[in-house]
Image 1 (cartoon, rainbow, N blue to C red):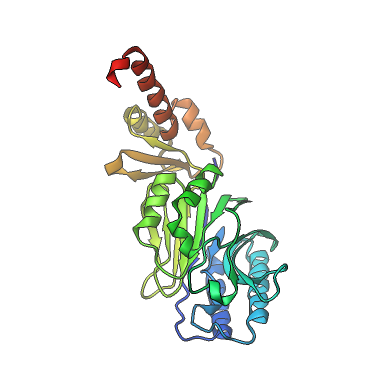
Image 2: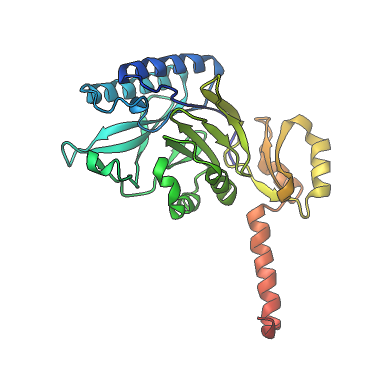
Length: 307
């Protein structure tokens, strides 16, 4: 169970801008984030062409410059960064991958994900589909990656849950709609979107949008708790009152009240949330349902006609 992390995700509000102007925008956004002590910064899919400048003859040089800018900024700001850029294929000269890079606090590339599902627009333009679902371990938790059109492949989002993703970052060209909230709630991980010319969001594992960019600001910021346990209110209502009385602001609770579900996270580095779980014998949402399924199966074995 991890610690709290400050996430800032950006929108690329830059219609009509050339790649060089988008680079200037990225420098401005990085500068604005510098005083916020971020743990993770997120930037959109193929961010340099967010303004529509796909035919720029300096695309390879600009992509290298953008990646170097992100690595340098990660080192100087001591933050993790996810950014979407074009990546030339080593095996197929002239072809490219739509890539999400994960850069660590030291500026190293911790991992990369090649978009698996390319639209009819991208395939004729020498964009290759990637071959696998990817997670990357960072100091704030395990990050899973999806890009834009990947939103439609439900099984890949399920695979990310099975791989232990605690945060899924979705660089994209558009908002994504309610489906992102549904994925977050279904798989109980955070989803962070970063999009072109629209609303970028931070969505919690209960399906709530915690923060979003808007008309007057092109970033959204939130403190998240990757890996924090989630519980059903059954069996926990009375202990929860006792926990709040005992720990107060040392703990943070996220609620989905209509769903009778809550997330419990520590806001005190000296208080591991595991300690609270053990002390009050709390049962996680998944364990509760696993136990209940076993109880139901036991009853059906003695009542076979009920089937």
